[in-house]
Image (tube, rainbow, N blue to C red):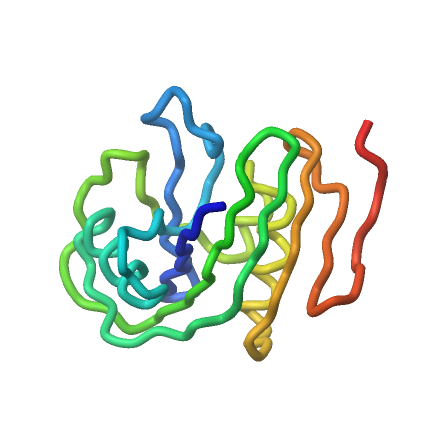
Amino acid sequence: MINTTLCHIEKDGKYLMLHRIKKEKDLNRDKWVGIGGKFEKGESPEECNLREILEETGLTLNSYRYCGIVTFVSDKWETEYMHIFHSDNFSGELKACDEGVLEWVDISEIYNLPIWEGDKIFLKLIEEKTPFFSLKLEYCGERLVKAILNGKIIKESICL
């Protein structure tokens, strides 16, 4: 199991999104995702979030909200615990990212981009400023087959 962070940085009704197009063997290839990455040894979720944002964007978060944790389960990839953050208070100059293309996207338009189906669930939770949440997302390939929010099933289907 791996631990990662994912942060949605907001400015003027837009989120800074990363279009993952630069790495060939990338489970997020061609998808639009928030900014984040894997924990380094000894890091807390907050330390990883701050480091990953600075490394991938050149931005420094001045404040942020730790929104929740997503348990990502897949029949193809290793189980992942994604620590979800949101920030609208940052400084610095945006730089190029070696993992893809960074772009400010209207929050309402993100749902029309190629994103993981489960991302739509936690994006709404972030927008609604839901108190700290635990979301389990189970995938069959790239299809979401089960979603459990705070211990309650909110979506369930069969893996074909």
